[in-house]
Image (cartoon, rainbow, N blue to C red; front, side):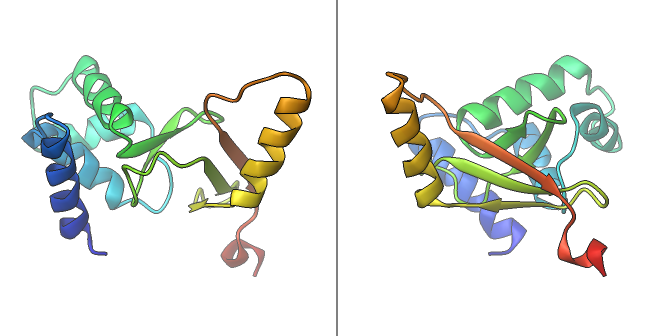
Length: 144
């Protein structure tokens, strides 16, 4: 799906949830859609300032919090960066393959992995609230 269709879908999704998909939220989501890898908040802020001169750190963090809350983006904990979600609204467990050379990030879905982790957690009486797995390595392009 192209970027504009995803932005339009995100706008409709937010409106259906009773939330406003403001120009700023659209802009930040669009910036993340253009990236191959994950992006830090200050890098996004620098890009945002090219068109939104008054943007401040609080501006970007509030926007990222909104996008996270509605599942439009994911936060990569290992490097405190953000990536657009292309199938928001399904509240799925998240797994990422992160290339340590070029920074490319691939989001994958493995129900088998989720089931295995849930089963192991239950055996310890642990209830998993959120599941994010980040696997670091070298992508196929960087291996060649």
